[in-house]
Length: 190
Image (tube, rainbow, N blue to C red; front, side, top):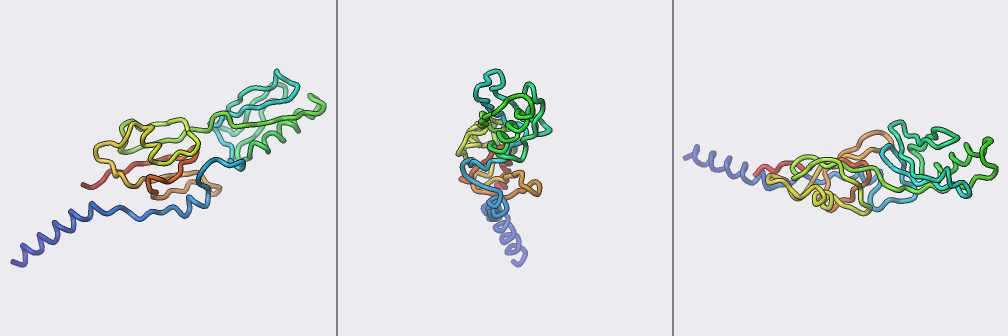
C-alpha cells in the first residue's frame, strides 16, 4: 500500500511540475531599457544610418555601421559612431568635415534601419529578422511563423547587450523587444 501511494504521489508531482512556469526575471533587462526606441538609442553594428549634410548632396546617403562600429563617408573616411546616439554621430561627422572640407557643415543623422533581432528555439522558422519599432516577444514569435508544437507559450528567455555585457532574463510574451535582442522560446515539459 505504501509503495502505491509513493508512486501515485511521484506521478502527480511530475505531471504538475510541467504545468508551472518559471518566475519572470526582468529587473536587469528593465535597467537597460524597454519600450519604444528613444533618442538615446545607442548605435551599434548592423544599424543603417541616413546621413544628411546640408548643401552637400554628394555626401548625403545611407551608411551601414560596420563590425568595428564605424561608418565610412567620402572625403573624411571612417567615423566611429558605435555606442553613441544619432546626435553624437552628427557632431562627430561635423567635426571631421570642418577640418578642411566644408566651411560650416550642418549634419543630421537618423536611423534608417535598426539592427535585426534573433529568435531561436521552439518556433517554426528561427533566425534573424528585421526589427519593427514597438514589438513584443509575442510579435517576434508571429514574425517567426508561430510556435513549434512543443513550445512553452507563456514565457521566453531574452538576451540583451548592456553597458557591462550581455544580460539575460525570463520574460512574459508581452515583454518589449529592442534591436539586437536574442529570444529563445523554450520547450515545455508536457
